Length: 485
Image 1 (cartoon, rainbow, N blue to C red):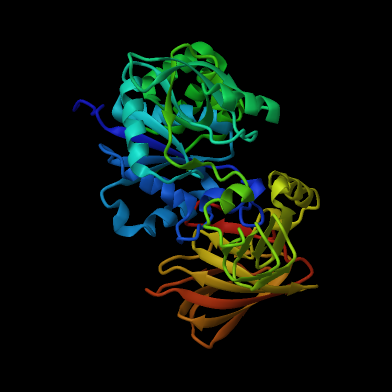
Image 2: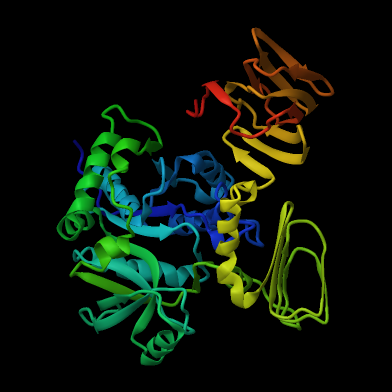
């Protein structure tokens, strides 16, 4: 066996969480990491490019929900030559179990692949960092500390008394360098406490980014959180198959259920003895609210920040984001307006942290808008709900070249398919045939059917559903190339 290379850095991107404070753009099926910024890139893409830009990186491990796997892979594919030579690997969670489980499982994967001494850099997928040169320098400092068997976190020098972040109280410098001992971690404070921490000057914002060797993290976790460590080890043993090959591993669901649902801060970092922090100033933001998102956009002469098209009359210090429609406002000050095709948010900027309360009510009402957009991503492509009413729904369906929907059946609805462009390969009952542009076919309720795109260009169709029940859960899958049957 060849010796494992421990000089390379192993970035780990954590891609999960609902991002409820950024509704209506962030939704459960398309959470915050997939949000597009004004330059067209998503937060996830920026995180991947940031990791790929570091020295001695040959692969990036992404821990995400299985539901996001195909969309995540497409996000990286869209980056093209920008990530040439950097290979993504995936750990797929059947359900979320918080950051302690995700990081510990990532540590097992990296230790298995690279060895105990491999340095892992943990990066949330939904952060913004403006100064990549300063970020790279901070990572270099963290690597040196991690090689001394320290658990390292990154602390952001505060610029205001922020109550939405946890804080780190810094101690003495380590060996006269940039790194500092960690005296204690502090939870999100009151405004008065935050002002006190800012005045003292020894406190940093807790960024939620970490650096340590895989073996040391697992050893410390085994000491300070033995129940967590044992449960994760059992899950890893059930996950890894001797014959495993490819770019992804699906985490075993049955054993993962026994892993405590706890953050890595509570479980490990706050209990460990050998913790260091690297103070940082690299234009960091966790984009935790629409107020934070607005700071990424340059203001006009009236302090208004606009993404999209807007006309603002006698209005100041507002943030407006529109996905396509013109937004007009008169006499508003310090207001957030976010317009999407199926939902509009209007709130004072000072209440932007409370958007999660809207999502809670949508969940209580079982309203689809907490989970889905009108345009929904699937492994095979996308569908967009154009119109719906009593006993009918109209969709635009786009299928990627070579992709196919599952072999399925609906109990309560029939479907008419009209091909707008491309060629569809259709299974309908015991028949298989092609449907070309300007042609259509009909799928009765109760018929097994499948739609595929055999061509090299996207297939675009209009689907008209009719029936007493049109919910997305009226699908019985018999066979599926994406493992959903």
